[in-house]
Length: 597
Ligand code: GTP
Image (cartoon, rainbow, N blue to C red):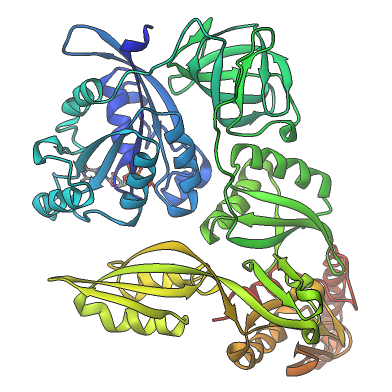
């Protein structure tokens, strides 16, 4: 299709404001799908997405729209995730778009991710169509939402803001027309050599690596010899096509088109997202600017549970291909053997990767306690060491001082809930920087260590504010912190995979809690086992895990002997992990650390 009849756009919003529902309505009105096809939501097809009711991956769909001007248009939309942990997906999608529909839920108004995504769209110079959704709901406050949108962007006129119900379909036709009239057609030169942005990859067990592309210049035909510019990898395109949302083959993709290329490549490590695709024999001179790499915020170790290290390695590579904001590298633990240190954008991201490993690859992993990056200034030569794993924490006497990452956290809370929210921020070492009270809500600005907000904070905030408080965080650099490493000794031997880093002032309380949890989670042996939590060479807390023999013998009789044998048998099976001092480290042991508050 001629580029003037093509529109490429993303749908962006805060979580749950209705992106996927609007996407479904658009596909329906353009007859891309019919109502009967629509199961729950056609686009969120990953199992994790259906289970959590959130979008994790962006989806691309080509629709044919019969416009009011009498012409047919090709509408390529990319539905994006709303959760902050998946914002990297959004930035990738926006780089492939010319415009964005900014969807705002009329019952909630402008929220943290509305603002963040709006800024991302502006940064990418996209035309923005503001749309208020859920106007059918009794609790909708359209006027207030409209005001908030204008506050966000005062160049917008009230008439430009569309009001719809993605659920009932009210107003969605106007959105389709606005896309045509307000979003520019793709620019580009058909005669120039091919230049296409690879904005996503998918690993297909039968077809190998599939690249998702947006064509900026030139043309790609099936069976062309193509070239990925970053690592100069060439391949013959096995198949090209577009999504409806299923894959549909075509003969060519031209300027402005969004589609896929089956590369035939098999090695996930040979390619990277943000690369430029061109033709081997008629190459573009320069690559497109691509993306900045995502910075991991939370790190944790993944260790194979069932001696399936090679499978795990393979699967992580495929997952990282599909999700370039997930990072991993190999590491070896004394206690657990070979595994991986993984980097995530947040705890929800960690959880989703764990679940995708299980759902899509049938793999379960042992996950160690998560931590952030620390900058350690050593006494010797003013050396600075950045560590992402507690095992790398230097000997305490060698340390001059440590810095930890901070965030500026903006919390908006209804006035009547101010006190519990401030108490919570205080418990998490938040430093109140600013406070702005409005009629109904107060906006609080805190400086908080990432280690305090990254794990449980969001859930706790939701709970103390009954879901009404919102949280937006922004990187605030590093700050000096008094932190120490806690080592866990079992039978007087340190278990490296169980060490973690905490603020010194919390060490006493947390280590007491920890040993009491470990008393029940460390598997028992035939002998009593001391468990100690050690900080800077001193045992701050200790507990003895009682022996198995005593327990089994206490009840006496024949039955108990078989029970005991059974326990012993189970215990030996449990030694799948590299076992030190007869301690099998189960996920429960790691959870003892994870659940500390
Ligand atoms: P994420 O992808 O997880 O960010 O969510 P989303 O923005 O895609 O939201 P989704 O489309 O999944 O909608 C969230 C919930 O709001 C669902 O239960 C929808 O049925 C509901 N919903 C969406 N649009 C409307 C609407 O216009 N009116 C009403 N009443 N409900 C709506």
